[in-house]
Length: 459
Image (cartoon, rainbow, N blue to C red):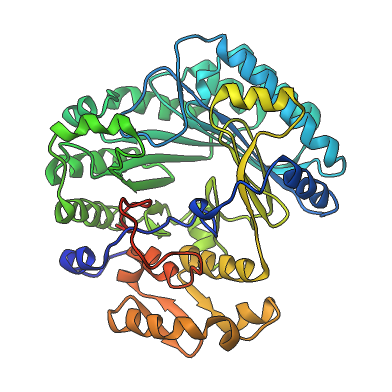
């Protein structure tokens, strides 16, 4: 697949801070009024729904902090800390299942972090056994986890594969030694390749590499070599994320202030160069910053217009309820979002008191549900039939979207979309800037820019 020539200056002109829309409404507008009691009600309401569940388990532990990281992590070398955490994970699962005795059928499990393979083999076995005792996995369930090649052993991969895990997301970020030293994540190509090869040997059917562009010391020639190495290994999928420098949110990023980082135009050039490399190697664009081999089920779903997205990423399966366990974990249950408390001490105290450790959340209105589906269609499949979407939600397109017509016309004039009545098609440059398109439909997004951006640039 060949890409058309994209003008970096136009991308720079149009890029602005905006949500990634892993949810709608996005997390900053959620409220603390959605608490443990509300979550209990939502779990009970979800018990009557006849559809599989997705489960997410957050393992926050890491032995070292990568300086760019924006995840909720606990840095420790004490393995025994994870024993207590698993105790509470299981307790939280049991509390949820008391309210959902009829919802045990699971078609997705995701272990995220942190570093899930911080857990040693006995700890992994205990967690997996608890899951196996409490849930029924469908025969073609998707079981995925995130791994760091620096701490993941062959024995762990084999154990997880034996349980049924079939997808891996391997953190790479950049293979350039100077960049790795600058960001605090030294990870040789040989180490990553050995783990990747063994995962293939074990039969993991889907392997994703995570890359980041915009890191300190990155430049086009070296980043091209990183992408060439990735293409030589040929993972099924690649996620290429934009580094967001927000030290007021993640203080560890302050250490980058002394290191040269790519300027806005250079950063866009890194992305466009890598994007072209993936296209020339036969990969298909998935959403705004992911790529997949044409044979991968994500690419097939994208071509058939049935791609979905949730907090765990893109998926070919229609997203239903996701129950998330662990500190900072986010659930999407019965038209509600909830996020758990981040500090482990508060997480433990809440469960000790018999309360779910909910920090904040949101109950979706009828309008939210319509706009969520619209944004997901645009973000995943680059098209939206506003008339059909509105009809599914019991209203007309004119009632729901008349305020969006002028900004949509402006996007069309810029070449981001093509509009035929209420039918929208996102064009190639718009696919790169699809967050800009999605923002038109965000009724919760303030028009006034904050003093310090909450979101990263759209490219």
